[in-house]
Image (cartoon, rainbow, N blue to C red; front, side, top):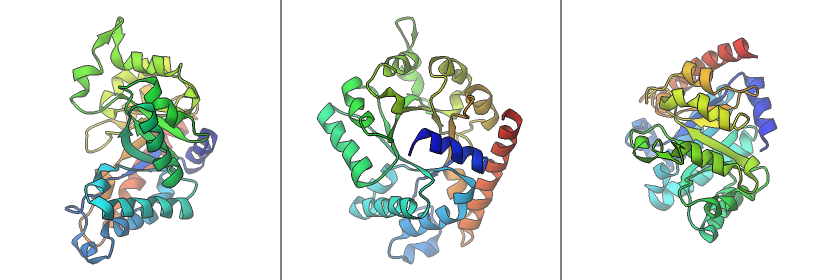
Length: 273
């Protein structure tokens, strides 16, 4: 999927919401546990209920890998369902991969060719040759971890190197990598005050922003500091939508939570565009 297509979907739907599909079988409604594939049954219901309010879906692969082969099968069924039924939605494999070049090329093949995701999150710690294999794919996107929402981000990401915070150096250096036009960046909503500085470095790139809702991030602050002339934001919500209800009305409750966020986003877009 091209960024132009993504931009058009954002403006058409008046939403830049990404729904995180982080499925925990200990939290899904108990009536689904009798299904042959409860993870996929849960995802399918949530997707069908929320698709009109969002432009992207982001399964965190750890929540599937934890269940072994069955979980991986559920993930593959989920992405196939999205690609076949909602092909206008941007899909993100939240896998946080990153390894030496030949290993990264295998990761890229797995998630782009076999699974059919539009994008993947990648850790930049190992540098250029660990990321460029992902960037080599046309119309696929590599979402680089830049400044994350967890407390441990301050252990390294904000430490100064060459007179600037490490996260800024990572973003600056990444612009020199081959096919860097395929890069997007993860910036946590709980670090919204850093977004203005980040926008000075990458004014035109898309930012994936987790941490709104359950983690305490502010949608208004994210938009104030991070929105660009093309919107340039995908704001993720996972737990707040997925587990809005633990009963048989879980999909209806998820749709209502997605609607609440989309209405807020629409108001912001109408004010800005």
